Each structure stands twice: as structure tokens, then as C-alpha cells.
Length: 201
Image (cartoon, rainbow, N blue to C red; front, side, top):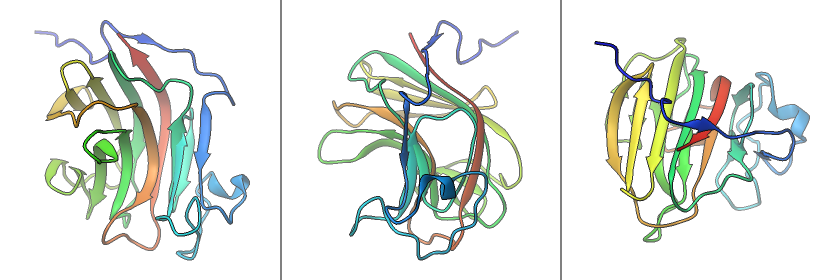
């Protein structure tokens, strides 16, 4: 029996540089220091003073992230419908305490509906549910489907369903990927990505 691909029935949205790109990076670093595996020390700053260290993008096509950087998609924020993120990623050995993907937005005073984090080579939903072990140095295809109306998020790795989690209330949502510091983080964190798409149904 041939299983349907996660993207069946979805249509990719048009993504244009730079309109759909927003880099979240330490406020004391120029953008050119945030790409292609650049090594940055743990002294790099947050997006704004007094905030947690991170670097995030709202969208990119092919990127390598080191130490607190994420892509944040811009122009495709959503409050309803069924939306999907697709991308291929690898996390090098030693990266831990890092969020590499988010469905940003949630109700009830929470910031995110989903986070995928790396702890000790395990890929986890937040810091509780392990969906893959021994991931260091291996490429994976990630698909995340957010069905807003049914308050449901489904996570696939290499086209295999790994988890279904409940939503966290109404909000304005968008996808993010890269590296974002969590508890117990390593001094250097990196995730490499390619083949990024956003789709909707």
C-alpha cells in the first residue's frame, strides 16, 4: 500500500526574496555574520537588549544557522485554515538545548503552539516527547501540518507521522526555523536547512 505524502492536496505559496524573509538575529551583529556556519561566541546578544538570545527567520530557502538565529516567515501569517511547513535539516553533533523549529503563536498567554527542540541528539516536542533519537549528522525531511480549525498539529519526519499534538488556542500564527536557545544549551548551536516550502490547503 502506497501511503499519501504529507503534501498531497496542498498548494505551495509563492515566496519571494526579500519580501517573505525576516532575520531575527542578535542586535549587535550584522546580517552577514549570521549565515553559512559562521562561528559566534556565547557572548552574542539577543534580538533586543534584555531578551533571550536567538536568531530567527520567518523564511529562507537555503541557510545554515549557528548560535541563536532563526528564519521567520513574513507575509503568510495566518489565523485559520490548514497550513504546512516543509524543509530538510541536519543538526551537527554537540548542539543541545536548541529549538530548531516553531509554530509561533498561541492563546492563553503562551508564545508557541509547537516547538521542536534538540537535547543530547534527540529531537523532542518541547522537552517532553521524543520523536527521533540519535539525529546528529543525519539529514531529515520535516513536515508540520497545522490545522487551525481542528486545533491540531501533525509532525512528520521523512514522510512518517511522528506526533499529533493539540493546538493552544486562537492566535496569529507563523513558522520559524533555525536555532533558539533553551535550557541547558550548548555554547555553540547549529542547524542547516534546505528545500524550504510553505503550503496551504
